[in-house]
Amino acid sequence: PTLTFMGNCIVELYSLDYHSSYQHAFIYIRQLALHLRTAMQKKTAEAMGAVYCWQYLHCLKLWVAVLTEACQASHGQGA
Image (cartoon, rainbow, N blue to C red; front, side, top):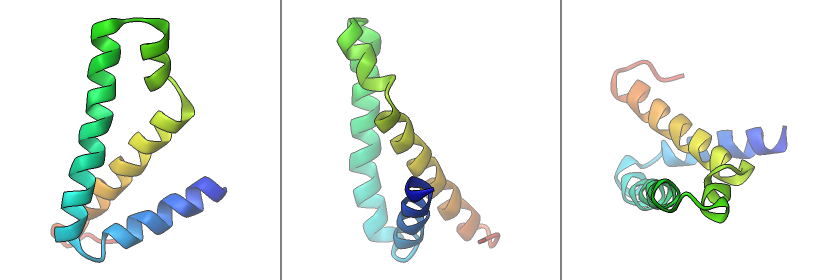
């Protein structure tokens, strides 16, 4: 419940200023993509563990929520 609440708060914060949010989100999503690419290239237990952990999956879930909210807001379907 605490992670969900914190995630919802972050989604709301990022929906306040899309210009600043884009710059911030781009860096973090790119970093997640780099971790995934490294894991797929190396295929070691350590590299795979970096993407098969709760921290990585929760980050993905958070950024999906942020992007979904931005998309809905831009199409007039904001929650």
